[in-house]
Image (tube, helix red, strand yellow):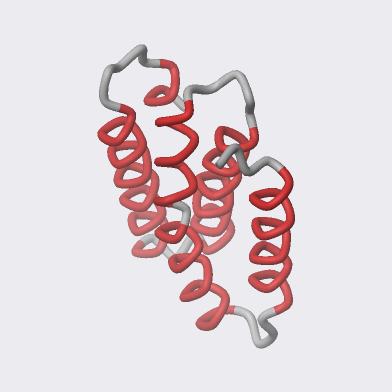
Length: 108
């Protein structure tokens, strides 16, 4: 996304603005009853953060911010799946994937 391409001295703001914009789009799609697009934006936000965290070419500050802020799209996905999907299998799969990758690519 656009915010990750910026050469900013403050990755905290880049990550926060990226998440805020993505969650805003997801809420707009929820109001329009476009559940597929809402899920798409939430999942894309989650995977963008996860991919940036796992990328060793990114700065440590950006990677840490991505990991620290990953709970926001994850909680939004949990709410989405609890409302629109009877099982939590998709959510639990995302949590498991995050745990495995964050453990494997942990630079700390």
